[in-house]
Image 1: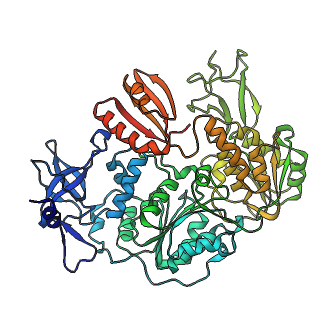
Image 2: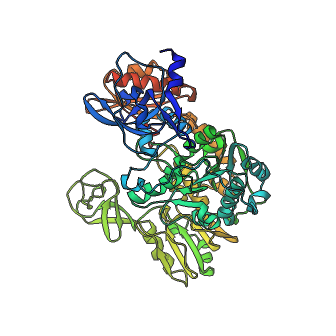
Image 3: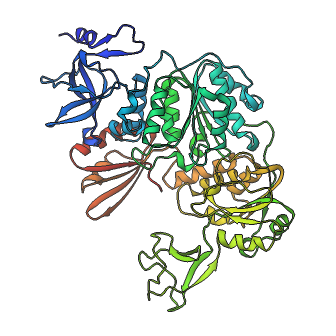
Length: 615
């Protein structure tokens, strides 16, 4: 059979079934074996009577066993011997051509098997839920939605964003005013829907439900669905409803970026620099990156929203959208007093009724010396730092009970520093109640008359709070924490804390480095100076902004093979007979690197590729 004839025979449209193309003949499939050495399509013969289509979950014989696979589409790459697809497991297609294009881009960007990407993009199947699902409709878009676009129209470049949402595409970095964060998101979604398109909003947290997510759900009613949390059955039921075209707006955590909406006009990433937007499991994708890929595949708009945009967002080609006038409360920089109690902060707390003290260090203090033997305090299990928290001394690394590495004693001298100590001294200053949000406590804003002490876990999207005072303690320690992006993470957290202050309130930062670019970015309310200083620092360290980073494990030949690829940065170490390499690439070398890793995996030179490891 000729190539043209085989292609014509491979696809047949079922009458009266819109958007459903049944395939027959040779098809390529992705076998559910998430190994880099098997990351290639396999050809099988798909009988017409099975009703398979692009995205169908099927069973195929593979190395003597029946395994799951996904149909990728018809193929002309037909070997001499072709086995048949045995059956179609589910009547629901799990992706279409555009979804497959996105999955392939994610697979290439993160050098991970396509099967892994598909498995992470679709919730686990619950067969009983499929009996109640309805067939997909012809379009996910409903009638145009009228209504005001909210404050975004008054922002610099806000008109350009609204015009793009009406029917165009592009990347926009959005800095909402602290009191307008939810309203700006609602207005952006409304503009996309008014253009007859759909929208995805990706939020970093599921609990508590972010104020922005709740505002969107309230604004669009039955047109919107919250794809947040829930058990396995509930998540699959929601996903089926999205695939069936029942909703025009999907609001959810990371997996929502893959939601099977059609006619997509907007992918909105809320607080795009938040660490929860990065998946810790393979393929270790970042919602910001996948959102950008999806917008390019769909020809839609991607909005990366944050009080403090990340360097990764700012480095890409984009249009900046921000308020025309400064929306932030004034920021005061003071030197820390004893235990972080500067005189100005003490006076401010005495005069305020609602305040938030941001202390990123947990506990009451750090153990410095063993009182039994006089040796420096260190964990007996791993030599880690010992911290006093909630009345117990434990290792901050392995969380083992505190015992001296030298003599085994558990009596230590403690230097008082941390959120519990801040709570203690704040009680002696202010006339209103003082509370501490510790590890595991549910995030909440301060009460009408309360001073709240908390760290990173407290910085959730709880809506505008209009506080009298927000104080940022231990700023210098945050700037000197280990990690390539530690300084940026600190600044993002400070902006989120400062956003709780009313416009005529006070933000007090205690630091000995008033001229540090991060401190000055918070003072000015603009991040450009910090970005100009931080980007060269990262490049000098060997990790330029926007450069893909991988940790590759393998055998003795791994280092030599990687050096032939001439990466930008290559750091080599070894453990227990394995070679571990940290590789930094130029973005243009990503495709060739991925192809090399797949070849080396077949030869067992590469055993694992981990994308974007924590540094």
